[in-house]
Amino acid sequence: MNKTDLIRALKIVGIPVAFALLMRYVFGVDSWSTLYGVMTVAFLFGIPFGVGALTVYLSSVKKVEKWRYRFFAPWIPVLLFFLVTLALAIEGWACWLMIMPVFLLLSSIGGLVCGHFKLRDSKKDEHIFLSVIVLLPLVFSPLEKLIEVIPGNYEAYTYIDIKAPKAAIWQQVTRVKEIDTKQDKGWLTQFLGFPRPLRAELNYEGVGAYREAIFTGGLIFHETVTEYSHQHKMTFDIRANPYEIPSATMDEHVVVGGDYFDVLNGVYELEQLDANTCRLHLTSHFKLSTTFNFYASWWARWIMKDIQNNILQVIKRRAEH
Image 1 (cartoon, rainbow, N blue to C red):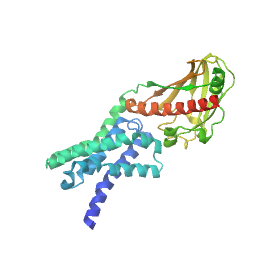
Image 2 (cartoon, helix red, strand yellow):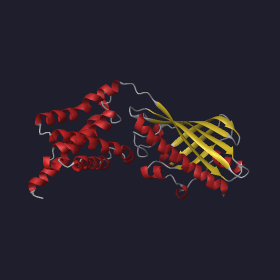
Image 3 (cartoon, rainbow, N blue to C red):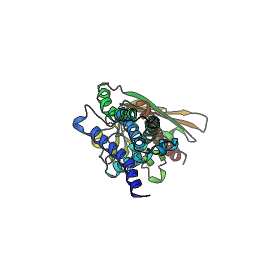
Image 4 (cartoon, helix red, strand yellow):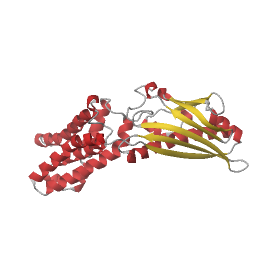
């Protein structure tokens, strides 16, 4: 690769990365939060589209003629943008991992659309398109901010069959003793770097009882029992105070009890299947407050189910022991 080709390659990658970093700064300024926000459709969908369009716009027609290039080339600046923000601690690993499919797909769409205009050999249309795409997030975000976010309530349901007496199972439900790392099988939450469960403590069995579910990193779910039927059902409200959680524990965009995600309550139900087997049900209800709940709810439900399945596995192993 000669010097000219190297400079052009650096422009093709560097300018889209610089654009994304500039937009991340603009959308992340606290004093501009009434107009811009990272947790908006304008940013999460508009910025990667713009990155893809810029990448193809800066590329040669010869390269753009190949649809694979138009589709995959935008992934390079997107991934570099992720790495830079991670290195500078601007964003957390969990946030980027969850939004990565959207960024990659939208950047590819931006590349394909821009390639369409570029291959038409109409410089005027190409320039107009690029200008609109780059400026659209800045225009759309203030309009999006005017829309009142309607919180959505969602449910995560899990269950497990346990070959043990009801009494042995219920004892593990009400009070979960220390869970060491070898017993922790929550693969998704471990991969995302989320806090893992340590123990749960209940002061007494009955309505009004107080229960603490303690996780690593200082995360504590404060739970109040609202319905109790011995060895049959326990319902509890859940409250997590985000101010108790150290900033290093969870990213601000996914912190429990924060502006965008909160767990509302949980329900344990114990069902006798036959003389030797019981089925333990665990259901949780959580709230999302974003303009893209249609996407965020998938991830939130997977994460909640991973946490619940992990706890159910611990209860099963201990009750059957």
